[in-house]
Length: 382
Image 1 (cartoon, rainbow, N blue to C red):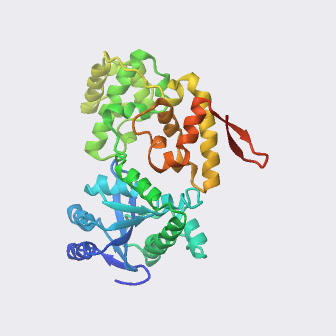
Image 2: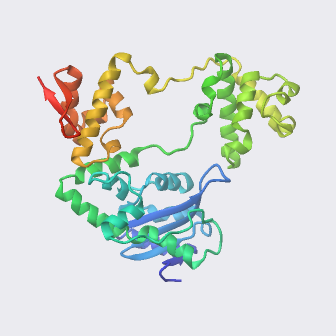
Image 3: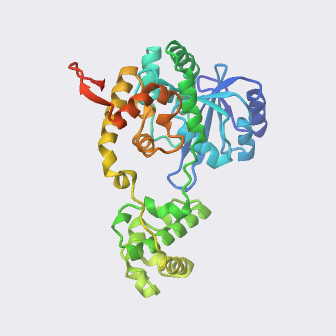
């Protein structure tokens, strides 16, 4: 079916034909829809592709994922908006990694936008508003209505124009290579899949645990994460955070003690799951685990004033140059710079060209910051 809602593809042959076409083009636009409310891993619900202004909506629930993966076995430049989650979903569901991307949200950050939504970009760059859709749509439902398909198609319909428009503006201000560096950084980020051995650090209030309880928390959280992955269910369906903390604090030896832990109900005090929890407690009982301090906590107090100055100057330069502040430099980037971390982003590439000397002089004490009398800051060199 082809319409304003695009061409719906739900057969192996249809996906293979589209994959073949994608291998012969230089660029196409992409978006995905997914859910993960009831599963550990995301459930890929739709793949929307705009190829030469022809929109295809692929139903990944109807075709094997190895066939879906073939869609991305090409060297084309893929245009997306806010690509991080799409990249994660493709990697986690079908093991696919894109070779080259253009993220319209990131790129817009180099021409004066601040983390714009797709609708904001369309409004500002094209002069009209996208139709509002139901953000709570169940994309796994079948059949989808024509309105739902049209809403999904709209997510890729205007990406080719935005790609061209933003690229022209990047060319005008000489920032194409800057944006390309940011795209590469995004592609090189690891997926969001949690390392089970580090899962305990994501538990709310885990910092409140005493040292003897931290090893148990680490071990039980690892067991919970691995069981959730095996069964493909949310971790909260294996064991709640409250129960995990209760088990960690009490470190039970027996079923009777386990039943007395806060947050533990009858589901966890019988059968194999009870034995698995007690085994995890036993493995963690003698672990010497320290909760890692975050960067702000362990950051050398002597460097904090320098970090404050650097942060203020990065914000000033970002505003002056019409660059999203977080793209120019984050808190983590500032800490890496001050620590002399090899490959620190503020010491390399376009960021170094833009602010590197200023930051070096600020830290060395050969420059300072003053108000410029017009609501901004200026750098003073001795």
